[in-house]
Image (tube, rainbow, N blue to C red; front, side):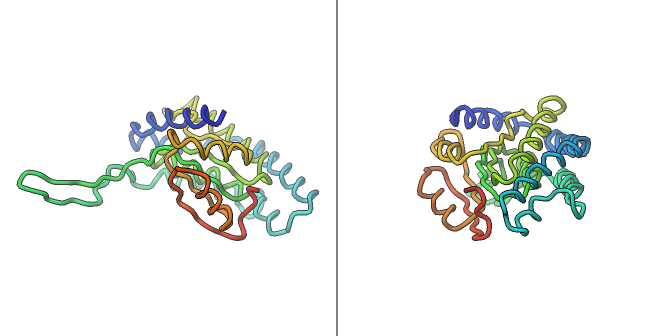
Length: 229
């Protein structure tokens, strides 16, 4: 199962990196519209996560982070997707030019990483943020969020994948969602297909990821964000 997820992401990344900036940006505009059209469905799923969090006695601060319905958070999430779409194309930028000899110049260009495995906290809006950034930069992404937001994540992923498959040139498997620690452990072995792991959580999480994979890890430690466990 993990190998299939990783392989599908890899195949999607080979297509995604060939798309133009206009095609990638248009996909984000479609996602923005799709999220807005599915607002009620997404907020209903978010309410389930909220009710479960309250029932399980989670902290008020965590419950507040889960809530997409207050303070314009949902609309801000959607607007953020458009903001990324409007950014300049991050690919094929010359970041270094060196003359090696007469008529021989060396250039360093920005390019997609490939497949990203990203583990993050319970903020449900993060899936939209990461999706936008990944597609804009030509990368496929496998996402593992906190279990407290699972219902919201599922609906967001369904909406995004439907839009990608039906209305854009971005492959559906460019963005995939996983939900368990076991899947993370198995995916950490898929160094043939996954190019970079980005864990956002506790120091222990980052160390554990680094100790259990041959894939390069870009760690971001935050002791308050360990809900993936």
